[in-house]
Length: 442
Ligand SMILES: [Zn+2]
Image (tube, rainbow, N blue to C red; front, side):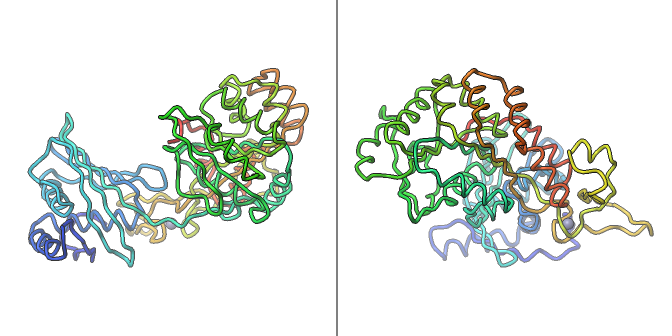
């Protein structure tokens, strides 16, 4: 789609800001004749078709650049000349109940949209910057709450293995690892739900500011660190309810690791702890860096489950290719057994086919080549050999080596399985595996 007035206006229905229906109606009638109404409709329709979570408009002296965030990745849209962009912004601000003449001060506002049978809320934030003005539009997508590991992409044999491991009902610790903004919460909920929750009494202990959407069927107990409380503050009262498992969603320091270990030992009770890490070994190393009593931690740690997310190739337009044996070797896939791999077809405007005809972007993925996300899971059983190494402060390299010697399937190998199945590309796996760790989850 381009910003060309030869097309009809996409049938986006706007629900402007306003105190009542009458005011909203008035607001809408005011913007309809303005030249920015058409481009605003195209912009919002484009963002919805592309399933953009965040749309950023950067106003500079001569032009306006457009970027969309889709499945966590930034994509460039078509730039606009400044005049077109200014008219559009005036309309968007009016729809959101903001002052369209104000270009410096930070402003926020909301409007509703309805397009392709989906209702969205758009939150608009504008702010003057050194080069001009930046406008960010957040579209709220009603996401299905995924809280089962099978729906998150865990393969069947691992689901079985996890269920077995989760049956332990004496002292011991499980780490649930992941990266913030990358399925961290989904993995946590999925694992908690994989436990036999009907026969077990679970409580999740959470710092008040970190409380996320309710984890279904689990009791949530909060503490307020602002008032000097710690994760241990609610424990005495909680123990009167005789819980079977306690789960902690944050590990702020070494002292809290020690306290959680002591608790598990004292009541001979399993504890589940959420931790940051790009893979299982890294999660263990990150806990070790908090300087807890490593011997105690290593002794209690039973297993680690880690989830990362990557983009799924669009099944309608992915391109099949015969992989080079060296690539298969690098991925650890059996040479000769994988006949084809897949890569994304990334659409660019003006692309021509063999007959010099202009290619249209794939309707299923809007030409992005990927659609939706899937999880890769790694499950590490902490063997006696690993426990010993953890207690002796072994580094990542040695821990990885020990795990590999114990036939552990690493995150990289788990990802290669998804590549072999054609669910994702080598490039996407590489991107996720080499991603720099982001800051702590909030
Ligand atoms: Zn496609």
